[in-house]
Image (cartoon, rainbow, N blue to C red; front, side, top):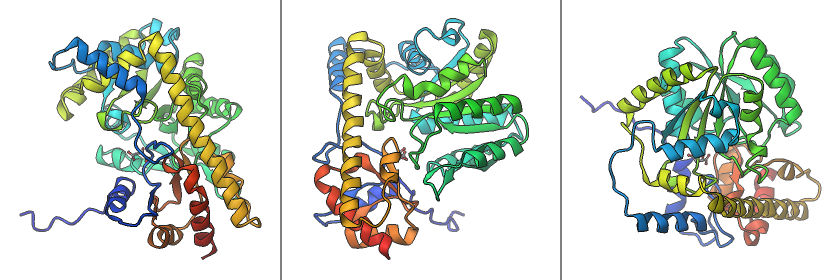
Length: 399
Ligand code: LMR
């Protein structure tokens, strides 16, 4: 009966790591997945995470099931991180917060919620976007369409195109927005542009759905990177948000994050949370405890929070450093080409505009692994390798 099952294609992001691991070249570089590496290109476990784990071990806590909505201390710390500890939305208990499985799992529960309670609603997704967004909504049975976002000419935001597409969308659509450090482009609206986007969302009664995967990685400031959700609260607009701790706490494999709705009143929040729990129960029952305990130790404690901010600034700073190194090396290799886009983009990635064939040249000839949309993860680059990468890029775009 299953003989006709076709082979699924490799994942456009995680499949790159599989191919990288098989390569035996000494020159190889994995700039595919957005995962932070040290200057020696080794994975990094944050010191605050190790410290939290030591404290947890000393407490010898049990492994009982968590409530479906997750660890209470985790939910509190996570809402406060995004919205600010003194947010009126938290004080008025208007946030329905469900601990979930990092960004993807949170989005998936959010998508299931849209399918069930907003049937027929289309989700508008930026063009381009993170390689998993479309799968998530498609698999949940939610229709999606794209809105203009990236202008290849200016390597910047197609602000007018974005507004026009959101204006043309039917009233009451869902609009998926990247909270900061847009993946894959590294191009974010300015705060003035966000204000205009929010004006339009409000006028059209669209529901903003913020994917917050990089809080702390765009500007190095947790507050600045949370401008959009905090501004929506200020404006009294209801929204959904999926948060991930994969990048900012380096908890990739722990699968720790949250799906939340910020609503008009606490009654609505209770009803929405009850339905999120109902959906999560049928998908994975209840969330894992280990990462949630780490988050509540670090994000929920004043002392550890400060240390965490220091480490995040260090990580964001190293990425900014290699961004500059890469730019300078590119100018050296080919001074006739404009490489300023590398410096203009923010976050973990640089979006190069390379074609799939040029990306293949990077991999096949230079052993540089990247996604075929032209995205390079600078979190996987070292200063020492910047000149090599620049040489490979100059060669690939020349072809
Ligand atoms: C990425 O974009 O590389 C990360 O978000 C990892 C992933 O899950 O795709």
